Image (cartoon, rainbow, N blue to C red; front, side, top):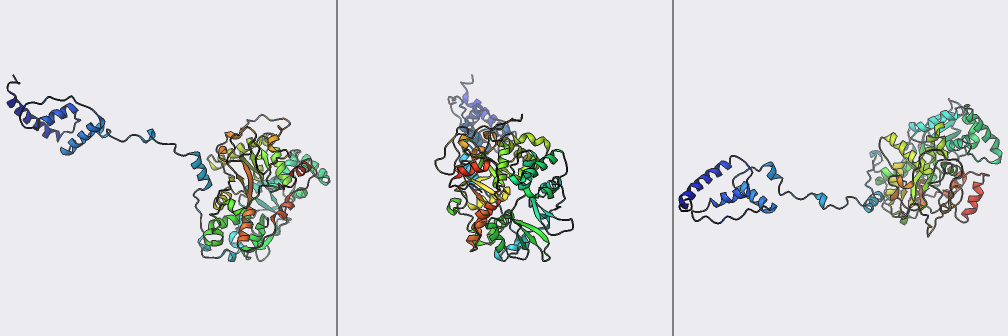
Length: 523
């Protein structure tokens, strides 16, 4: 019946659909594609009903059609409609967010913020007085009769200058010596029976070891013969920085600063002076223009190095630093890749009886202990970076030295492909360990090994980002560069290094000297 009278029925449906359209502008509902077609057809002029086409649901056409309909009728889209037609997730197309090459580039050239002091703005550093860089907090005193144990605690608490001054009496204001981590390392080695005394000190070494094992109090006065150090250098606080830069560039590590009465008012160290030049370099064009230059271009540092294998006992590293007058030593794997750093300041982790097994455990294990303790102190995981490469800028190198408060940065090349198989470098340097054998032929450590977990070099975070050890650059090298660049005349730093190197009659010394040939490995 409806096919014979199509016109009236269509007219009626048209009115109904128009009413429905008006209702739809007030009630937002999802529209099905088949109903969209029907509604669209009812808006045409009366005529034969066209053959309906089957609905097609494609994301693009459906979304566009609904969007136009919603715009034409002020239709507010439903939540489901709002989710359609969105761009694909970037996860399906993204590339690795941070490649190793990009990470290495960031390590080589990190963004570094420097804190400038406005009181140095517009001034020539040559006119700045030494006293402007020191503080009373730098000075910590002990007496000759202070026990080694108490002096060690005072040293650990003095995190600013890492040294305590020794005076004769509590009322004295004149220092007669100092006590630092190198002295503490020498004392600890004697206590655990690892000291290598010269012939004239054998009796003293035995006496100190026996008294320590009996828990007797040992005053600093009794250990002064084993505390060999550089001559105390003193400057008045009103002197210009020129003299301090010359001394530091000549290899002096610290300067005692006195007031007009001759009393010590502060201690200026190499790292504190370098930190000053780093933060205030923008005020000193002669210094600041050096920072963008590459280490390779400046030619500072040396290829003559001593390192310790990660599998060697910790006792080897401590003995090596004591015998060679070093404040730190690189820890390398069998591919000569730097995997850590051990310094004399880390001896503070060995002051309890419970730490005795660490001496015969590996250097790699001790590096993991250092990182764990640092994480406990600062409340987060940390992997301090003690290395740069020849294409690092001087600014990057100085920033790392300041951040880590280290005396030296190890210079590395690209990492060796294997962390386990020995590799022979095609060019110098030849790196020696404490038993004087090259790392490629380092024998396994003899003696008992205490039951502590062994940590492989590759297990530490960031260790694979280092590279083969090829050289070292020190605070002395950089301050020597600053001195020469500004027209000063520092003396040869090797003279001070020779003074720090202790003479010894142990078997380590002759064998290492004979292995060096023409290469001086001291640093």
